[in-house]
Amino acid sequence: MSKYRKLTHVYYKCDYHIVFTPKYRFQILEGMVKSLIEYDIQLISNCKGVQIQEMNIQKDHIYLVCSIPPKVFISEFMGILKGKLAIKLFKTYPTLKQKPYWGNHFWSRGYFVSTVGLDEDMIKRYVKYQEHNDNQS
Image (cartoon, rainbow, N blue to C red):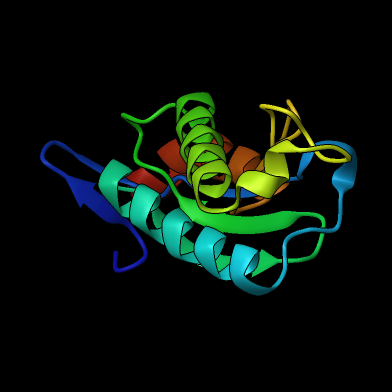
């Protein structure tokens, strides 16, 4: 059960693959901007109980593989993450608010999210034959 995480009354394995991009996919996520983002993603994630398993920051997008507790909505987490990162970036680098960049928006509106783990067929087989497996024990 080591790959499962625990809260007070629940064991869980809620792993997600998330990708998000700066507005207009500007290639700006490098150097000090990249370092600040990397540090703050860890900080914000820890505050929400989210465990970052893998992170890869490219010039125009960010990949995350993370474990998000069941009590935290993915949309809520992404809203907080993107919002706090944008505020910090604009405060640290005020020139980002000027043209040709964003005005008051740093990130694209949407993001990609997918669950990570067992494939659908394996889960269906597990559920279908669970009673048979329980009777054998």
